[in-house]
Length: 378
Picture 1 (cartoon, rainbow, N blue to C red):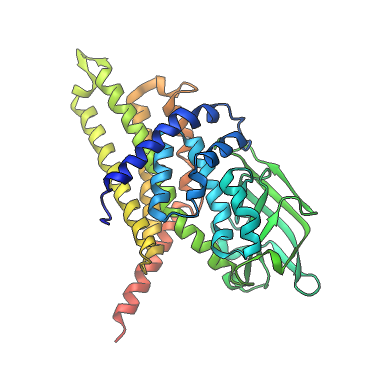
Picture 2 (cartoon, rainbow, N blue to C red; picture 1 turned 135 degrees about the horizontal axis):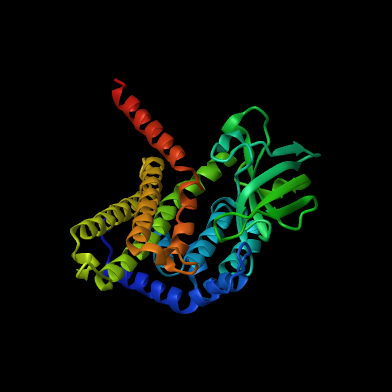
């Protein structure tokens, strides 16, 4: 299918998701307790069949879901995305027993997943992880250390945890483990963050894991992490595009109806040009997200570069568009409960998580130089 346009069936599906988000998911999201997992919302996502789509759809469908949900209900979007991020390694690399135990419950919305990669000293540098997996008898380890800024922690039912099994080996010495929340020695605490969804820290005090808990292969967990991020980075961009579009739509309505200087706000050239710029950047980001997702689905060799570009452009664009929308709305947009006040708080975090904007620029440059070096070889 074309990378830069949607089929009528896809457009209709997106419209259906937006309607469900506004009618059935937003009321549940509005009842959420800040900083807590909204289990009724997660369960409703399961009943609607959206969580199951995480494991049967490609990257483009994931982007369409996230953009459509974000446009109408960022809380529902984030709940869906976190289920996918935490459970995708189980879907892609888990054993039959791991998949049979957890994926049906994730799809139903009865088990909450989390992706535990970041650490106090290794936020965006995934190869510098310090959580130790110390050998314990044949085929076993004890996890000791700390994870920080983990979405859905400490309330998740299981965690995809990345730990160092081989010291001083960089990215080559990391292993991914599936760790149920009830393992002895695993504790956590919530963190008060700008983002309204739950984020916490996890402390591992000799938490036991075995070969049955490994996701993929021992010492090959970095591939698990990067494969997951390459899938989800374009969809973070889709989340950002959904927020940008919501801000743009609100701005179009506001400037068309707001009286100012003897006419409507939209009649002022400065305002009209600002709105045009917001629309231009939003559409450019959307197209890059769709292109990156299509490249992932087609198995293109340049997925890491495309994924990084999509996340970078879309998240930076959303920040610009939401900020411009606040400026054009004026003081009313800063009132607690206003859509733009909500979006203004939501839009900041995506420029940091799953690789900060600076990390994405580093990935892009690394991939560009690697390609140039290959093409220069005789």
